[in-house]
Image (cartoon, rainbow, N blue to C red; front, side):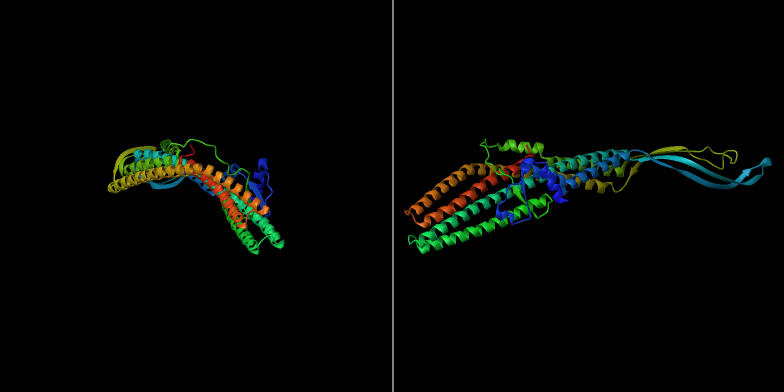
Length: 437
């Protein structure tokens, strides 16, 4: 089932054709599948359990609203009434005769008992709760998108680390081959060969660590997408593009956007309203007016067999009363405490939101500033490696600078990828913090 869903997704996305995986990646799993971020998000929305749970809660809240509205309507009962009535009937001359009356009659009964104040505030609380659940469902969708994107960027970063470690392995092996040839020809030292051998072994160990980290990142993303762990996910090309230069976003503007568009914040606001309405409903249930009425319709009384004094069928009644319960004080205290707790949760969420916006903004700005420097470092280290290698081949340089240059290139490539991943992860955090605005 999971593989079928993944296959359908790939058929629907011809741009996501599978890329040839390296031999190292191919050994990690049976199936290697290329995946880009938009289609990962589509797959998550089709299969994510958190989203399904949020939708179910919205349906549940809609049912609560229907139930609250139904409490304002009368109840209707339809049935058949069977009865036997024994008694005395007045006869001629003032004498009474024992009589029996039997009756089977269909009937329809409408009854209505309501505390108007409680019903009104119950409906208001249910509607606000439904609105809060809808906002929660919206935020759940954004949070799922955020988690998928973070896992995708982590996978792309792990892929970049594999590329850097693989290049280092190939260069180390080539350097070992060159050192061995120079030693065999009498132009090199055994020390250089052993240093090259140690460097090649260290590079291979780094590659193993990178492969293991990549496999863990793929497992995490596959778990979020509810896919078979045997499927190895490979990010499509361009998963970590270099961002275009842009002005630093103003913190005040970002915070205002978060306050206006965060769905979870809107849900908390609605929950404050729910606590207000629920508290009022609880108080009015203990102290307030109560209205009741009923009406019944049935076959007419057979007067030929029963006197008016023996059988009566009231067809309608209505009453208005005022209820007063000693529990009103406790309910009022509980309602006040619930409102206070809701407002505390609101204030705490606002404080956390401002911290989230400021932290994500600063992280994104720092990564954006570091990316050009990391690129400059990478270019310089590659140039240094080329010069060191050329000097070694020409016999004008020793091995040690080449080894250092190789390590510097690997570190520079990893640092460049790290900063790209930091930028996109921070931007993803900022999108979540500001409600996607």
